[in-house]
Image (spheres, one colour):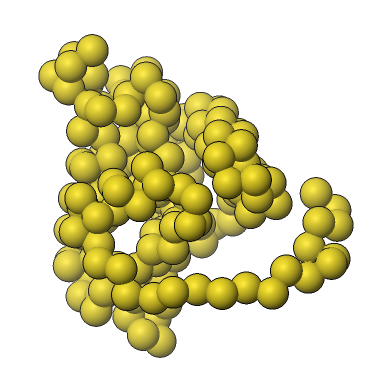
Length: 162
């Protein structure tokens, strides 16, 4: 498939402000979230980091979504706002395998950047797992610059209730 063969729309929604849109896409969003969790868990070995996205969304949950004419979610980016620093955080970036290399990620990131500009955020920030090379490369291509090195102390109780 070429980029022109997939027809889709890219939108930013807050679940509580767009309930009609959310309800239409929720079934395929949940499928995409499950596929994302499985794929990234296998890639990174970090099951608990990704399966948390499968939880129910709240009215405050925000997404950038690529949706086709059948309300099938082709890709998503979870968005969070830090009003204190006027930072838009992106996380859990996913594009369905059949929609990859079609420009879906690029258009979602362009929409995220426009949203950030329109809302007068100071920056868009993203955290990517050190083993997730495809996402790191896509972020670089989208204009992200590496600015931090992160460290963690794994806690023994982290795997409880998963």
